[in-house]
Length: 270
Ligand SMILES: [Zn+2]
Ligand SMILES: [Zn+2]
Image 1 (cartoon, protein in one colour):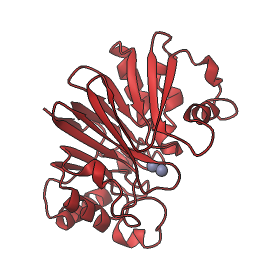
Image 2 (cartoon, helix red, strand yellow):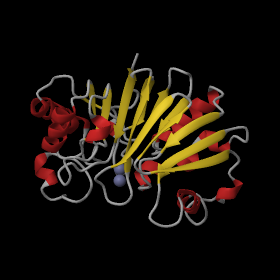
Image 3 (cartoon, helix red, strand yellow):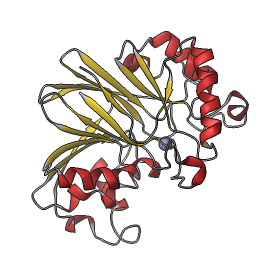
Image 4 (cartoon, protein in one colour):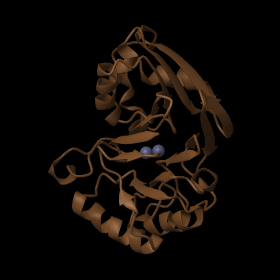
């Protein structure tokens, strides 16, 4: 498995001179499996550039795993090239809603007045798989979905192939539920996890669905992943502030290999 980050900002896309090193695009990660399958994790604004690259590569079948429907995780969908390729099949996996269906919510977002093209006129073949607390298999790739601590229906994912595992938990508030995401993260070869707030910031943001650095570190120490990537950077944090948070996280986690997610970061799990 090879993973590439196309967006790791949280909440709102944040372009500008202060965010060039880690990037301003919201949540989107590309995974190319050992078997050659294309997997996309979340469809934040990073999905626009990733979609262009996938179309250029001739990719016509892919699985898109959405953690939830907050806009920072879906607002790239309408600009994701494969959806506009009539030869493409896109399977969208996402949390089963309390009411309606995943398809209905996506169709509502990708239709007027929120989007110019009615959903039924999007050219690609689109299939939906609703998940909650599930384990299943996609062409040799073992998927675990599990609910996490975040407002609304939200899951994290663990992908396993040939003995290698990736855990993707971009939004999670372990301060309210220290057990959330542990099943997904424990022993993973790489963990992408919410590390949005400093301890001071979190004091006024309890219940917003995100991790403070001390809570992030507690989860990392308990789960013991082989690599850790800090994800869902706050729009208010500049590159310099993020680098200070990385130093703080390394101290709290008691390991020097904790690293900030940044656009273009590639991690090969072989
Ligand atoms: Zn988010
Ligand atoms: Zn969210």
